[in-house]
Length: 335
Image 1 (spheres, rainbow, N blue to C red):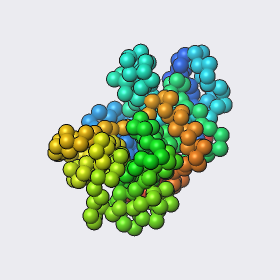
Image 2: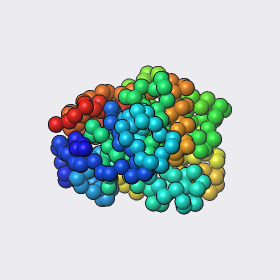
Image 3: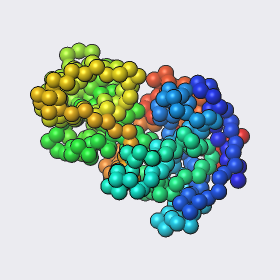
Image 4: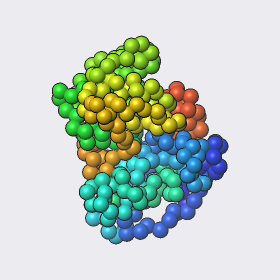
């Protein structure tokens, strides 16, 4: 069959209508009819080749929700007609030490859903069924799409670092990642503070679950947090950020700044503070996150746009105008 999509043919160019023949369905593959696909900043980085590894023509999209039309012979857990999601990691080796410990998201040989493979800005796609995630009943597809990347990115460190009632979490940046970080941290039972350079977001941050709001263009809090999630993509005064951590606290970097960080290691040595990162979640944690979101009614704030307006959607995201995730709604045939 022919799949209709939108693709970047060269870096930093507008997406163009693009068609390709669906590859054969292997024993672990599924053919999905896509209903929704979120737009992530990572898609923009791939379109513009900011990471110097994009492969063109490039069909972006890794926050995909669709139904299974065909499946391979070795997928007993997947049912035809089932509603599933696809995230950033298309596959991993499943045999390395990381994979054998369940940490599929950090496999050295993992592959990407939309670089080297065609992603979800399309009416259909072929995916690895072992990395497809059943969408819980009660979780609308349009809201599920951003959870598959943004939700997984903020949920995974909260779980890995043992956040619970009595712990304090600060979230830097109230945007596509940050507004979900506030909701998940609150649902974990933490005391949550929104840390933002935009004072006008105070009321929205409260609505997303923040107990406190601290404007970072004023005096920064000091020695207050067990965990800080940094969700923004530009440079910060990292010594000030680390100064907001309690002894043994952790800074988790979710947004990748363009310039290298300069950090004074003294607080890490003297107070056993740590720096880590998170980009997505393992298969088991991603499934757990979807169930947790459905249980706690965690939903992203989204704008819905048709796939035919994908370039306008990308322009809104680049301009910082999206509030807070854009989800593309896919028509049966694009042409």
